[in-house]
Image (cartoon, rainbow, N blue to C red; front, side, top):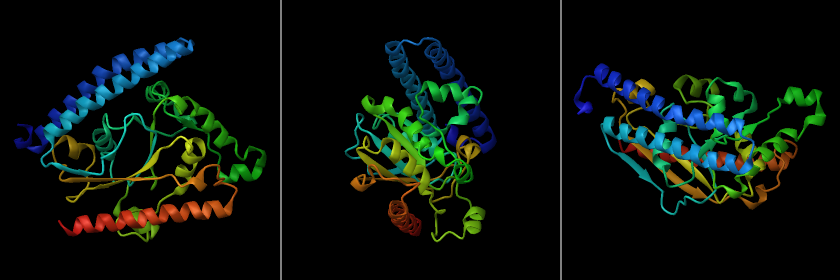
Length: 298
């Protein structure tokens, strides 16, 4: 019914519905997060962590149902065969819009473990969200800039050790970690300013993915190479809420983690860094060609 309403009314109803759903699930999530923060008993914290994931996934389920209700066209999703709820995955994806995240949550819901992403350690102090990310066991990373490391060489490798320690909890907990390799949402202006060699993508930044591999590489069963395409053009949050999101194409390809990546030193080994970047650039070239083929069929 919402699909036939004028966009402003459609969007207002969608905004209220998503806001109410956010409030509804935020209350038990923050209550459980606070309990996890205050109770230092490991067994209780593990139980609360599982309970928090259940809350987050129920939140996602309702959001996804509402997305289907306001979506004008069906999605085309391929490559989900063989995914496991009890697996460990590293997800690399192109980035078009803030809508990419709810799309990924809907596509992978109950097919793989709850999707997390690496967060800079400083962001734990973000009001409300920092506590939620901590409670949901999002891995926090300690990153040093090249300028800082030049002045403090003794800190080299500390960021990887800190991140690896933060990820130790995932040894016995199936996990999916998301990385947008472009580092930012693609726009025509950014594409032009970068002088990107790809027709439909920004230049990939391999450093974030390399950090994830350094911290968790021996845990991952596979890399999920995800391509999100909007044949009718991407929209932001209001476009989603007001029913302006057109066709969505999502392709998932499972790729093995190259064995030579395990134990590699991206920061200090030029040969390894060059090899890692070459792999990422090849994947990006294939992704760019796939997007081109899909758009040609429009």
